[in-house]
Image (tube, rainbow, N blue to C red; front, top):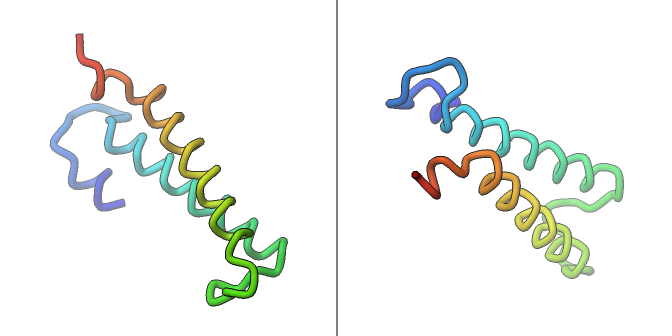
Length: 76
């Protein structure tokens, strides 16, 4: 929310707004996975469950970010 309202860009759907949406979806998907698989945040019994999930989600999140916000990363 801070990125969206504090952005320096003008327009209806700025890059900061896109980042806010991407990050919100990322957090919601991760939280949903934790709840559905009964993984508490302090669980260290099976760290591979948590680390593999976060690795895959981070790769997907970064890919979506590079595709959707390519004009920021690769200006013409």
